[in-house]
Image 1: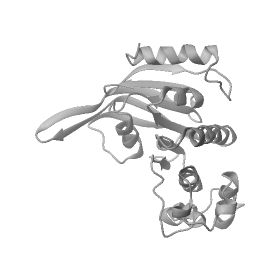
Image 2 (image 1 turned 135 degrees about the horizontal axis):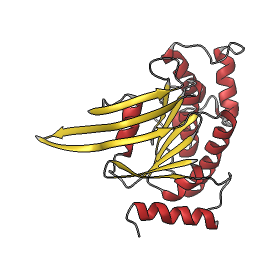
Image 3 (image 1 turned 30 degrees about the horizontal axis):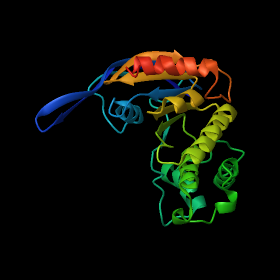
Image 4 (image 1 turned 90 degrees about the vertical axis):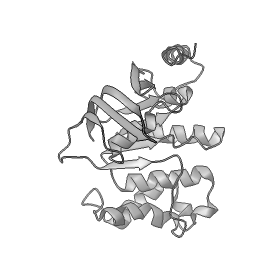
Length: 248
């Protein structure tokens, strides 16, 4: 598990001779083993911030300091909004792909790679579907496979970019409960991006409210899991987030 400290982190793009700032002088600290949600309107810089943390984008200015990290940079796993599975591979092969790609053994010497894939399948309820191909899966099941591929890589940090955004309401709620259970059992450091305030309040220990490339509010969520959307304490925090986003 790792944490991260952002110091005046900035990302500027130039398009057609014009420049704009997607991430603007962001300062934030994310604790090791915590579940942080970045919430904000579309286009506010959430995804760009995640891409900076993953190394898919290079910063224009500022610092990204990794905490409790033995290496210079941590192992980072990413779950995108689309599952991005290999259509020619089975569920089991898609999950094992991260081990092959990273050329690293299972995360514990007591397991070999086959055992680690088996345990990941079981953890996510995918064992009965191990031989299925992506075109035979529902959207929710495919997203579960995508998460399994990330977990099999055994990352220090899991980044999730609106992974449930394209799913129906019921599947989305079910996967929200599953990701919370997964977090409580494994205590991986998770940074989750969403524009859905209700979803943020169901998942987060800490919420970073983002607007126009900046972190405008940090809101701790000291409410036990599982949470009820209509509970008074949840509704109060919802109003606080909406106010920070100019939604009231």
